[in-house]
Amino acid sequence: MQTIPESELIINADGSAFHLHLKPEQLADRIVLVGDPSRVTTVASYFDNQECEVSSREFHTITGTYKGKRITVVSHGIGTDNIDIVLNELDALANIDFATRTVKPEFRQLTLVRVGTSGGLQPFTPVGTYVAAEKSIGFDGVLYFYANSEKVRDIAYEKELINQLDWKLTGLTPYVVSADHSLIEQITRNDIIRGVTIAANGFYGPQGRKLRLPLADPDLNSKIETFNYNGSHITNFEMESSSLAGLSALMGHRAMTVCCIIAGRVNQDMNTEYKGSILNLIETVLDRI
Ligand SMILES: O=P(O)(O)O[C@H]1O[C@H](CO)[C@@H](O)[C@H]1O
Ligand SMILES: O=c1cc[nH]c(=O)[nH]1
Image (cartoon, rainbow, N blue to C red; front, side):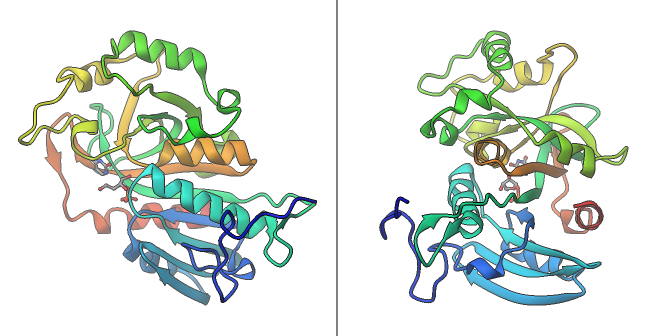
């Protein structure tokens, strides 16, 4: 069996994974992911008990029990590049033996639900709406670095996107991936809209926000808003769901993202006091995960 070298699977002196600083025995099968490290504390405030709390950089983790279910909540910070780190280290904690540095013979499947914030792109996704990313459009490039990405991508959807958006940006081709269908069924009811989410590789230009710098394609957001593929509309912008869905599908884990809309890109309104409005979503996800 192949041993993974020290420079590839990096294990700290205390036996924890390099960035997360988590040890294998501290990881539950059910994982809630959030961007903001302080949201970890909020999620864990619903737990019946906490067994461990670990913090390193933007990665804050608490494992505990909620209504008898063992759950780990982890913050990933901002961006799909961070998802590459978090997903690889969570998968390593579950599926690589840290003592022998070999892949375990039995696969352990993780269930991951990201609870995030988002910008709404449709009249039916105003501020306060909860939207699950049934599909994610990646404006990032993380998935392209892994073999067989085409097996988890929706190539027909990608072609339609390039066509309808009259894609002008060079050096970047959006990709399309789906969340785990059984997990979408498990988590969403009529309180959560199923949508198509763009994971942008930035908050400003890549989401069509113009402050001082002009945009390469100033019409991109309006084309995104009117995109229609067999009745499927693009609902919202956030910054992680594509690599989360894509990498999880390649690894064999179940993953999805659900967001609370805090910026109304159609009405141009914003809820800066959103922390209260995400509480109900957090509790819903904890109940259903
Ligand atoms: O609130 P979180 O979970 O961080 O999610 C969204 O908010 C951040 C940008 O403000 C990005 O991470 C985006 O995905
Ligand atoms: O507009 C928004 C709001 C939250 N997060 C994003 O990525 N975009």
